[in-house]
Image (cartoon, rainbow, N blue to C red; front, side, top):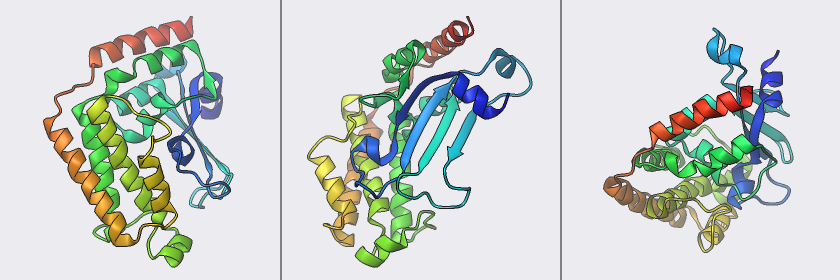
Length: 245
């Protein structure tokens, strides 16, 4: 079987992530980002060849996605839980969506376990992603994402800046309340959309990012939460047994 067959035939959860999930998408300007989770067959878990992810893009590798294009990434349950237990913001989002494209009973059980992944490490990851994106925005490190049309119109990549600020807002919510609200709740959502559409200039936007970064750093420093690794491990074992029948 191909990686595609293994992923799609064993899917337990899939949803729309990216700007659409956060509520910051603009009609006609965004691609469609989906993320899913699958459970590997026994031979891939117990044998020599694991299948930890599958990626599909409408555009070839190296070609920027266009509005409406599908970008799909699917993780094995083992890979997903490893990333989520380390607090990876990109994958944790999947557990807080308001609705799903596909959700089997095992996927629902994983969503029910989402608070077990919340930890100081998660806060550190949100903060680290924010800081890295801010440094790219200011030129302190190489910027991997380049949208020349936004730079030409506004003087800087407003979508990139918006995502840096969004990481701050979401990290603050996670470290304060122990959950994530998707789409992002007002008034923060309005601020993010205003940044994306150039209603804040570069200096104003950078100031917002700096304030969010400092607030999140203070919360992370005080946080004592740890991921419940035993609970996550028990779930993973039970999930594989259930899926394999």
